[in-house]
Length: 498
Figure 1 (cartoon, rainbow, N blue to C red):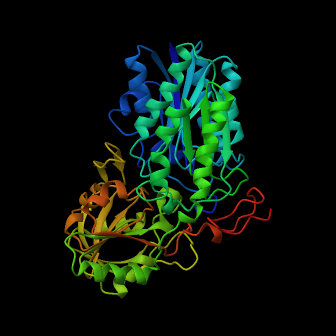
Figure 2 (figure 1 turned 135 degrees about the vertical axis):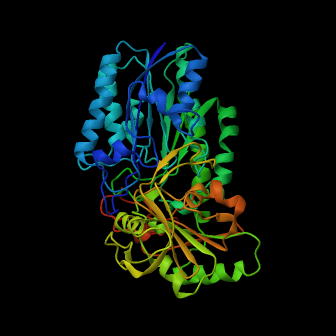
Figure 3 (figure 1 turned 60 degrees about the vertical axis):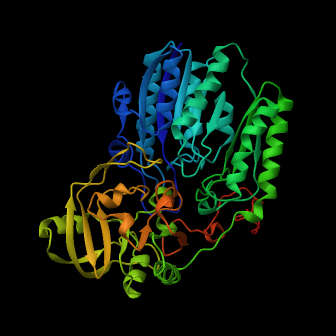
């Protein structure tokens, strides 16, 4: 069969400070840059990306892959209209040139909001369907944080969602999307679908499948699929997108509507029953640092602090200084933090050279309430061009392009400063500027959960910290205006009034 493939990845925090432009997708930063045609085959090799898993399975079955365009940008505020229309135009024009095709696969995120559209992926799938008609199968893979919409479900034959957070199964999900498509190639009819919207938002730091209740909920999916002969997905949602279809969703596909309904009801009822368990301790900056110092005094491994509200994987700019100030204020020893994204500071460090002392106004440039640049003298310990390859299970084989970078030191605290924002989710993002993470007493990571894939094995304990940042850990504190009336804005929280 001839299968057209493409991809568009963006997670939109409508409360974040900076938008995603065309140039952001061209660069990619932590992702491969915008890739068209055979560039998709050349750049996507042995990496943990859904399209890689899909392509591998399709080739095993002897199908012909026809590439259109694939792109991604780091999470941020809205995708600009210009960027979305240029990207959609490339994918649709590539699809038209590929015709005739027997199927279409898209590697999507599922939480893209643009300047002019609440539902970027739903609109892209609609345009694909408009080109190929109703008889050609269209399948897509989605992020676990997708806000699945009615338009996505209507315009896709099937959707497959990640089952791990940290997302160590991205390539595996692409392979599952292919298996749903192959069923139709083998003669199965378009499956029946059941959709259940969960009536409360879940903060992302408590969505991790390393912890309960998500760990148990996702573990139950395989048994549900076997019992009901279905494909079932739970998207826990991205709870920072202010539009009516922002919520967790269960989607089930089966040969009969009764099978799909039974599976969707079973899983959605289990999620609702676990509502109170989506919770945990969140420390303020000083509490986190002092507690980490106490633990570190008798620890053999680093204490990890997740600076969850400035997570660039959820739209933060990775430049707030609240937790760094707490490290300095409390005189933390053998501490390291990353990434602080500040191009001017990185360039100044390179101009000064290794061993120099530089006066900088570091970070704090995003205009986040309660945050500001940290003016101080820093020692330049190590410089780098910012190019490195991730080794951990989440970002495996990602070629990171962080721009000119440096390790700065103030007191006994080391800071990784870079030009491009990428979530601190891989140990190599310390090592590329000479910091060995396993030798630190305290590691502060600009991340919410993805870091757990590579850092949990080396961590004595993990603490979640809320210092100033745009990804508010308590979803009830966000200034919602457009949610679905009646949805609870946090687990066991108040209902949104409309």
